[in-house]
Amino acid sequence: MKKLRTRNVVSWVLSLLMVAAGAALITSFFLAGSLNSTATNSSNSSGFNVPRLDPNGNEAVSGPKNKTLKLTIPKMAQIKDDTVPTVPGTDMQTLGDHAAVHLAGTGFPWDKEANVYMAGHRLGYPNTDSFLAFFDLNDLSKGDKIYVTDANGTRYTYTVSKQFTVSPSDLSVTKAVPGKNILTLQTCTLPDYSQRLIVQAQLTSTTQNAG
Image (cartoon, rainbow, N blue to C red):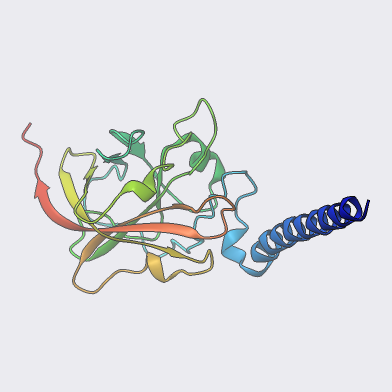
């Protein structure tokens, strides 16, 4: 009887601890959203959390008239010749319809110095190009290739240099690196979407459209 009572007490204590841990996780998730304004631009379950930038005064004046890009990542199953429009981070409709978006206010691949910032859903929405688009972004490692193609058919080859995580309020990852043309890919971390997973790559070659 004593052993049974002890077992019941232990089970009760463990249950309380599990409930408390769950409550703490939920509380921290919502507090993160309330404290970091850049983490609250998405209410969907994929935790997109695209940085909010002011694109005014940063409109591209060079390159193709059509600024739409295409993205191919051989190591990622979902990303092959996907259309990437340039939109503000608050354009939730476009975010949900595409595999990735290019963040308005950041650079373009044809710029001499740029941070070409793209973001994609980790989970996304079924029956759209966003579904599981960047789910395997974490599989990219140093030396992997990423291809960006502009509307004129010019292909820009980027080589992955690093992978890291940042908080949703860290805008430093959107800034250009002096003297370099880099590509930044962003999605959310799993399982709680509390951080941004970042992969950065450097431009290593440019191939003009042979046609």
